[in-house]
Image 1: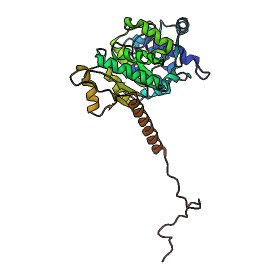
Image 2 (image 1 turned 45 degrees about the vertical axis):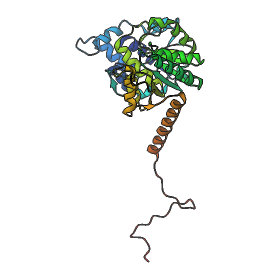
Image 3 (image 1 turned 45 degrees about the horizontal axis):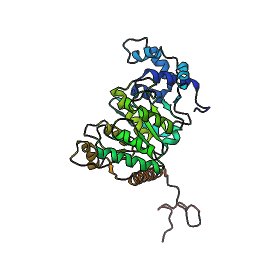
Image 4 (image 1 turned 30 degrees about the vertical axis):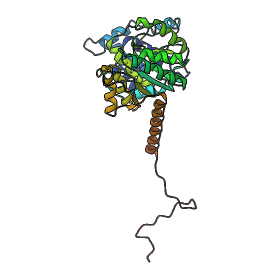
Length: 341
């Protein structure tokens, strides 16, 4: 779904870049944000002729991409490519521009590949990330299912990563409520990962959206998982962590949310569980608020939105001249010109 003010050259340049770079390559996403996709594409194509240039490999990959053909092929499989400037592009992804880097990944994506008939901007406008451990306990999967079902019932879109454990439970909970859910993939949107979730992936594509920064056909890698985490946080108003060990990759989503000044919430879990350590530490250190119900999640989101709006108003307020009760500005009286008594 494109809008007339989106330049076709920009779209084609972004298709080529997306097809040749690793998701979240901050060198490229940063340059695109500053210079635009067309100039960056020209620069990297020229870099393909310079062997010791950092963009040498990318330049070689670009030479094998026909962006028009790529778009035509994926359209036949129900996949579209959405870019900044499209009506469907979620404005909140711009928060990634100033959020820095984590594991050498960062920046606003050059574009997103999407499956599903729903509108990404509309679904993301009221979205909450529900994420957690792959090795979830029965307690964790139960909490994720119930929390997501209640959030969906209350009109929120649940966003997660389709992984085993908490992610799977979050998607299923939203679907049980008849609500939409967004699966953000570490691979192409046409590639079920894990394979055991192929049926769930199809259900999400039917009722919600499947989103990926990596192009169709791409396999998952560790770097793509890490890049995916920032998209989950970037699409949502806030992030709820249900379970996560101390070194869980799930906690990187919390770090991204914090970097964008969005609320991080944690569901407390038993202190005897290894899956509890990461979440409980976030709560103990004040890096996440404790939530136990969907209503508490919504309260935290609302409170944060109110505080952010108030802070923005305070920053933009410029005092004007003091007015008298009759609405007239008082005359300027300095001590030298003041009448003597």
